[in-house]
Image (cartoon, rainbow, N blue to C red; front, side, top):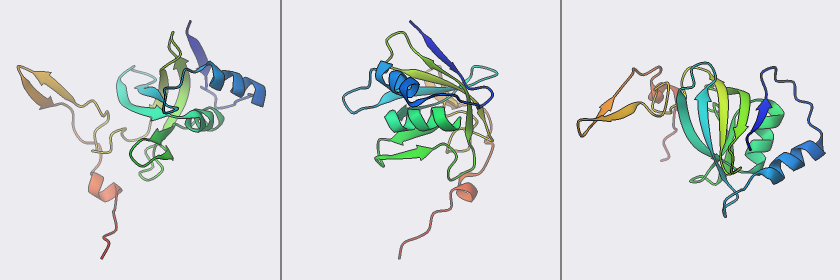
Length: 149
């Protein structure tokens, strides 16, 4: 069984009961997370893989902008909150086991924090890792980190 949420117009008419039903349908892992694959909504290219908790999925549904849960920082984050490279979610798909989701999104600038359009910019060919594509931005200019004395 596959579920579709069409977010193409960003007008969401969910009441709390609908949202509770959606969140209950998901089979969250033991950490309360679900893997979320993000694809370009026009081409189908895989842009990134991240994790969502209940709040991230709820905020994504409510705002139409991709939100995730950082396992390393242990906090909610919105894609593009620092860089401005937001993902406008057009559709959310839930897989047959309800233990993974796919976000079909319109990506602004690039998805990868390293500057590439997709986080999957490397391929394995003849036993070697090869970089494909060109950088869309320079990370050091976008992610200015302050030095702590």
